[in-house]
Length: 100
Image (cartoon, rainbow, N blue to C red; front, side, top):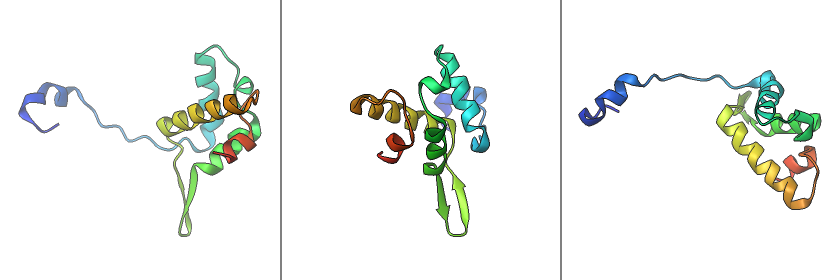
């Protein structure tokens, strides 16, 4: 964005650093489900949300690093919903996430 031919874009761009969703994962997924007129439990079970949280939290030495960023969560949910559809599961659950 430092090129002279994109100056206007650079002036209108703001860098925002998002924090991981952490304990707000279920709330975020609920809002996303409601955006498409669905209830969260129609798409993923509580244990599925817990498994997703654990899959997107990695160990880095003594620390746990959360990868629960909205784009990453969205990509995993799309993949999980597709995996559930492929195996004929009515919703995403712990087993569907664990199989990915």
